[in-house]
Image (cartoon, rainbow, N blue to C red; front, side):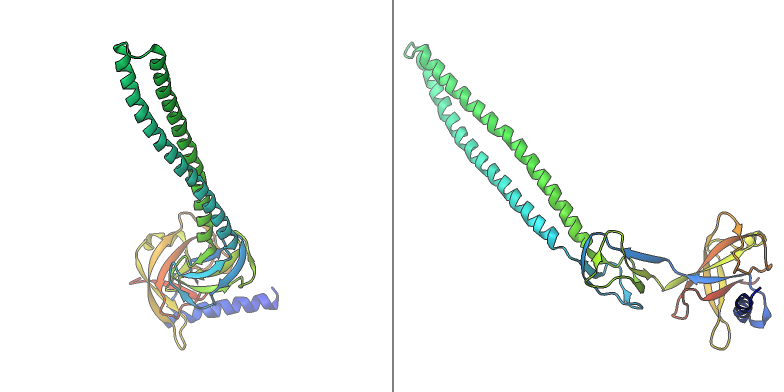
Length: 296
C-alpha cells in the first residue's frame, strides 16, 4: 500500500471517528447528497442572456435565460401572412356565395311564375326548361363554392399547426428554472451557441439533503421507511446531532463500496438507504455523516 492510500485511509477513519461522541459506534455511515438537476437547452441558437451564478437561489418557474428567437419570429410572421391570404380567399368565397344565394332566390321566384304560366298554356316548354336549367346551374355553382370551404379550412389548420410549433419553439427558447434550488455549476455564457440537449447549468434543492448510507442485512429490521433517526455531522468543536427521516431503502443488496464502513466493519453485501435531513445551512454536498437509531 503506497503512502497516498495509507493517508487517505487514515483520514477517512479520522473523519468517521470524529462524528462519534462518547466513542459510541454509529449504526450507519455515509455522505450527504442532493437531487441535482442539469438544465439543458431545448432549442438551438445564440444565448442572449443566462442570469445564473453559482450559489444563487432561484424560485421554480423563474426565467433565467433566453436563446435567440429571431428566426422563429420571422417564420411566424410569414405564416401569419400566409394565413391572412388564405382567410381572404374564404372571405371572397363567402361573398360569391351570398351573390349566388340572391340569384337563386330571384331565379326560384321566376321559376314559380313560369311554371304557373306553363300550366295555363301561357308559357312555352322551352321557357320552362330554361328557367329550370338556370336554377339548377346556380345550385351547382353553390355546391362548388361550398366544396372549396373544406379545402381552405384544411389549409388554415396546416398553417395553425405550423404556428403552434413555432410558438412551442419560442417557449422552449426561454430558459426556466425547473425547481426551487441553488445553482451548483454554470456551463455556458451569453454569446455562446446553444444546442438541444447541451447542458447550461446544474441546480439542486439544498433545503433538504439526503444522507446516503449503507447497512447490513442484519440491520434491515431496525430501519423502516418513515422512521425518525439521529444524524451526526462534524461541528466546530464537537459533533452536531440533527433529526432525519428514512426516505428510501434499496430493494436489493450490493457489494460494499470500498470507501464505506458499516457498524459491523466490512461485510460482503450491504443495503443502501437514504435519510432526509432538513438543511439549516450547515450541510454540504459530499459531507460525511452517520446515522444513529433513536433509543438503540
